[in-house]
Amino acid sequence: MSDKLTLLYQSHSPYARKVLVCAHELGLTDRLDVIHHETSPTNRNDAVFARNPLGKVPVLVTPGAGALFDSVVICDYLDRLAGEGSLIPREGPERYETLRLQALAQGLCDAGIAVRWDTERRPEALRYPALAAGQTTKLLEAYDYLETQAHLDGPVTVGQIGLATALAWLSFRRLPDFRERAPRLAGWYDRFNQRPSMRATPYEGETQD
Ligand SMILES: N[C@@H](CCC(=O)N[C@@H](CS)C(=O)NCC(=O)O)C(=O)O
Image 1 (cartoon, rainbow, N blue to C red):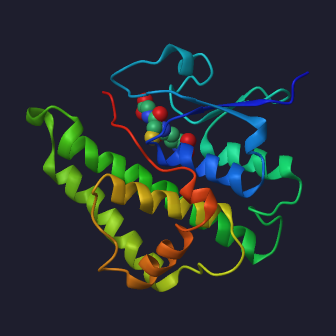
Image 2 (image 1 turned 90 degrees about the vertical axis):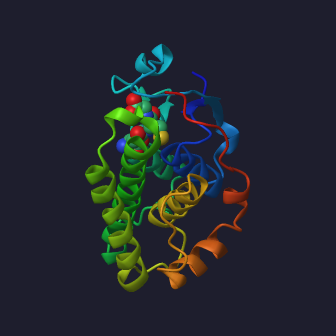
Image 3 (image 1 turned 60 degrees about the vertical axis):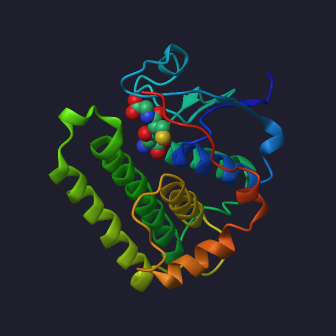
């Protein structure tokens, strides 16, 4: 059985980039075939639905565990495949700090996508400004939390990778900026962004609804 893994990827998805950055950090990129797929709930992609009934990327097709989704599950798989538990601490307070940070990063992406639906993706007549405002509040509250309460030092984790790829995506999509509101966070992000894993995986492309 081939030990190759196929990653259904998208060059402008923060969730997919998190997975690919994890693969870089774990030294697993030689094992991955990375295939770009466009996805949108208004533009069905049959190849993605064939692997994930939610029709979303990323998906990792594995030799032993079938097609894995979503990004949280894929990152766990890759971390175990690399063998050391290095990106997701196996125990101790670091484990839940890491998982909480990853959850917050997921939430940043979810809220950012929701803002985009009600500011540019949905036809203008169907947009709901109160929803965009409510989702924007989540972004701003998360920036404040990250600035004052998150522990961002220490060895690289999936939480940090998720956060960096989320912040990079929010900047890429010109969503509310974190720099002025959270300068400590911005400094951490600028340093993290210099890592080879981040430099090797820039965002590009437009959503195709
Ligand atoms: N919770 C999922 C979210 C994945 C997701 O929303 N991916 C987007 C691309 S950024 C997608 O494929 N959307 C298509 C859709 O919503 O139908 C994860 O962490 O992987």
